[in-house]
Length: 303
Image 1: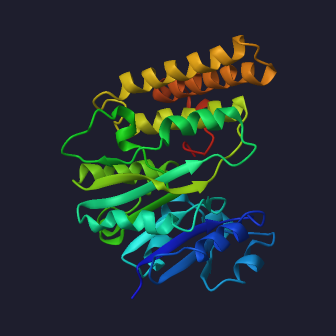
Image 2: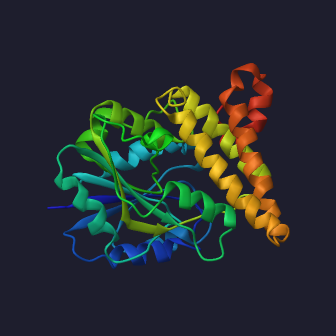
Image 3: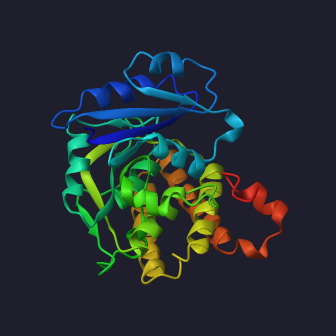
């Protein structure tokens, strides 16, 4: 009997997919599991590498890929009672990653779990600052019965490194009207449905992307739009905790920039202001013409 199914969505990830799968099959302290890989039109060696492992591979045309719909497809193919989501370019930090993730489901009230993300070696300071803020060392149980003063972090969830109880996914699914941040959308459904979500720092992976200021502006435009659409922006303490963490971050970056900081430290400040500008525009996107919104969105949220 399977303990879980591990779902991976791929496209042109020959640089990282081997390390990802090696780390999965090196896991200890868990029972039997399967790996379901859904590829959307890779033209590099991703599939060739993946076929060297005992996994199930499904292929869809590139034009059919849709974050929520493709995650629903992968979950529907899974046979385990827990569906673990792992990004194609994420690598578990230790051989106890999966055990740490699954242990949280001993509580029948837990609907989903997500793990820590650690910036890859050589990542920008922006990634380190961001991950330090949202992926700390403390385990958190998000219980709808009491929000624990978490503010905007109450609904935070990432399918880069997560797991969902299959029976919960069958009741919620990933909302397919969201082209982006479908993980945030399903997290809200799970919590509003009365299930708990656990943040498990011991289930850690190496993962990070490098964004320039323009990319961060567009990414946070989509985040602002999504928080508003999901009505998270109007939830208790969302605004106050978000502004608090932003002020803390800017103070830290300003101190680095003025204390003998080099050009890179000053760039961190520019990136933070790009993020905040994009975020505020995303919150107020209803005042913008559709053509402009399409240009500002990083993930085609208005297509």
